[in-house]
Length: 76
Image (cartoon, rainbow, N blue to C red):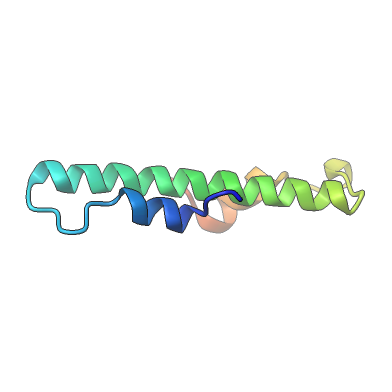
């Protein structure tokens, strides 16, 4: 079974960051988790359309475009 992003995040965050290095590690891991979540959501959408026999040809947006617009993934 594939590991969820939440499980991966839990396994990789430092529970009690004591230093700036620990904090920087957690920020890096959190950003990676966001990337993984995006990939999983796009993969899910693509597999859903494949399983339903649908194609993106008739849709105005791809799964990635929809994700980016819906979740506003621009770095802040």
